[in-house]
Amino acid sequence: MDVFDKAFGWRDLKIAQATGFYPYFKAISDSDATEVTIEGRRVLMVGSNNYLGLTRHPKVIAAAHQAIDKYGTSCSGSRLLNGTLELHQELERRFARFLKKDAALCVTTGFTTNLAVLSGLLGRGDVVFTDRQNHASLVDGVRLSYAEEKRFRHNDMAQLEKLLRETSDRNGKLIVTDGVFSMEGDLADMKEITRLAKQYNARVAVDDAHGLGVLGAHGRGTAEHFDVEDGVDLVLGTFSKSFASLGGVCAGPQEVIDWIRHKSRPFIFQAAMTPSAAAACIAALEVIEEEPERRARLWEITEKMQRGFKSMGFDTGVSVTPVVPLVIGEQWRAWKFWRALFDAGVYCNPVIPPAVPANQCLMRTSYMATHTDAQLDRVLDIVEQTGKKLEVIPQIRPHTTVTVKVASPGQNQFLASAVRAEETPKSLWSNGNVRDERPLHKRLSDVVERVTWQAINTDPDELAKVAALPGKLWRQRGQLPSLLMEKGVGLVMRQHAEPAEPEDRA
Ligand code: PMP
Image (cartoon, rainbow, N blue to C red; front, side):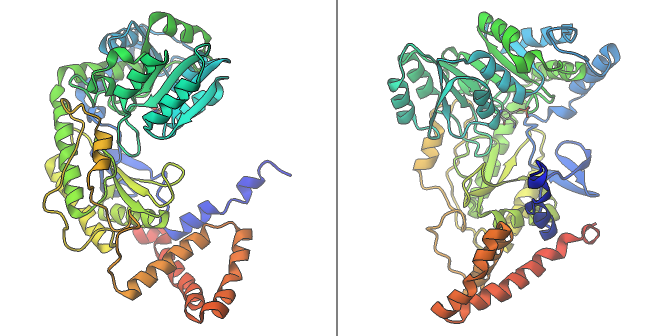
C-alpha cells in the first residue's frame, strides 16, 4: 500500500478536464476587478467577494505601497515573537472601535481566524452548537477543539432550542453560525439565535465574512442589520472580501481576546499578516467608514440583479444579499452552463456537492459596488441568452412582476423565511415539480446526457456493475433504453470532447 495510491488512481480530474467543462483554477492574467483577463480573453467578473470594489481604490493601493516601502514584504515571524508591527496594533484598535467591542485580534487569514478562535477557546466540557451549513473553517475549528459538537439543521431554531434545552448549564455553551451563508446568500436568524443564547446561558460567535462592510447602516454586518450587536459575543470576519486584503479578525471582550492571543496554536504558530495586507485593510476600513454610498450602490445592484434573474425565470433560492445564486440543477448541467457563460464572456462560480445538495448545483454570482450598469446589463443579457439556449429558463419570460427581497438597511425582519414562504419562481431544472413541456427527443437527449455524466463520474468498479445494465434492460423493456445507453454515451462523449483542446478555444 502506498499513500500516493489514492492520488495516482484518481480519474475524476482527468475525466473532467477531458470533457472541456472543468471550471476550476482558471488563472487571471490581468484584472481591474470588475473585468479580468483569463486565457487571453476579457470576461466580466461576477464571481468575486470584492463587494465594495476596494481592491483598486487609490487610497488602499497607496497604503499597501507605503507599508512595503517602510517594512518590506514580510513580517518573517509570529505575532507573539518578532512579527508584531505597530500596523497590526493599529488595525486591531480600529476594528475593536468599528465593531463596538472591547478588543480585537487580527489573524493571518479568515480561515485561520476561525481555527484559532474555536480551537483556542473551546475545550473539554464545552458544547458548541453549529448550523449545518456553516463554513468549512468553522467546521474545522470545532474539529480542532475538544468540545462536543451539536449540529442543528440550517436556521432551524426549534432544533437549536431543543439542543440547548438538553444541555446542562455545567457545560460552557457557544452557538456558532455564519452571518451571511456564503453560497446561498441567506442570513442566520440572528434575532432568534441571540434570544435563545440569553435564555439558555450560551455565548454567540458569528462569522460575518460576507456581512462586514455590506450589511447594516454602517457596515457592521449581520448583527447590526438585526439590531442585536449586544447579543453577539464574538464577531469573526475576514479581510479578503469587503476589506480588499488578506487576513481575519475576532472582536470581543478584552479577556477573551487576550486568552486566544496567548493560548491558540493556529495564531501563535503562524506568521503575522504581511505589512501591505495590514495597511491595505486599515485604508479599506477608512473608506468603508467614509463612503457609505458604496454600500448603497451595492444594494441597488443586488436588487437589480435579483429582479433581472427572477423575471427571466431563474430560481435565486433564498438569497437576500449581493451573493445571488442561480439554481441550475445537477452537476453536469451546472458545469455546462458555467462553460457556456464563460465562453460568452461572464465569469461566475459553479457550486457543486458537497457544498450544495446533488440536484441543487448553482452558479454563484456576486457583485461589486463598482460594477457599472452597462456591465450588469451585459451580464443579464448573456445569462438570459445562455439560459434559453441551454433550456434552463423558458424561451419567453414568465414573470413580468417579481417580488425582490434584499437585506438592505432598514429591512431587518428575518428575510430568509420570508423568501422561502413566498411563491418564488423556479427555473426549469431547479425543481423536479416543474413539468417539462419540451419535445420528446429533447427530453430523451437529456436523459442520455445525465446517464453519461453519471457514468463518467463513477468509480471503474461500480461502472463494471452498471455495464451489465443495458443487457438487462434490453430483456426487460425492449430495445430503447439500451440503445440509448450505447449510442448516447458515444454521442455525448464526442460532444463533450470537442472543447477539450485548449488551442481550439484560444
Ligand atoms: N468564513 C467564511 C464564511 C468564508 O466564506 C470564508 C472564505 N470564503 C472564510 C471564512 C475564510 O476566509 P479567507 O478565505 O479570507 O481565509
